Length: 204
Image (tube, rainbow, N blue to C red; front, side, top):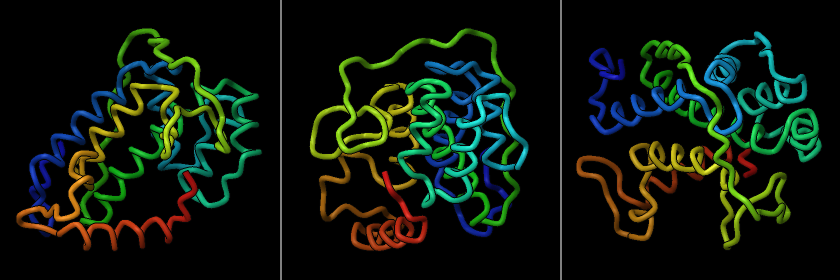
């Protein structure tokens, strides 16, 4: 899996490796959700089949996957009221990363990878404390650019692990002259990412 031998263009090895780690993380229990529930959320990003999660949470997954620009604070708060804030943050993280992996495959015209089998175990309960909502739909940490996933540190780490290979690491983002060899330079990357964000109506 994630070898991309049939892709029409070469794919860097670090991208396939990052996706492999993401699939392994997806299959494990999360901070709030069981492994089976996490796989359900991932599957919901691909199909109209509802999950066993509370209705408002399932509806949020559907909106995030298919019409992210329509998500409002009321949708997020309804999902929180139907479950809890760590569950909602975990759901956001899963949908974002699975959608990124799937979009990459669709852009290459190769089959989507099968979702992993769930692994045994209980939720970890690793949840950050002392965060607040600061004109955000959910609690976030301090700083000028809050991270939507701050409440569930493992989700933030998973995002960073896939963020670097697909875009740039946070350290690389500090370098205005960063360029991949072979590949795009920083200005070209920013142009594409800005256009993609506009097209997808990014709101976080």
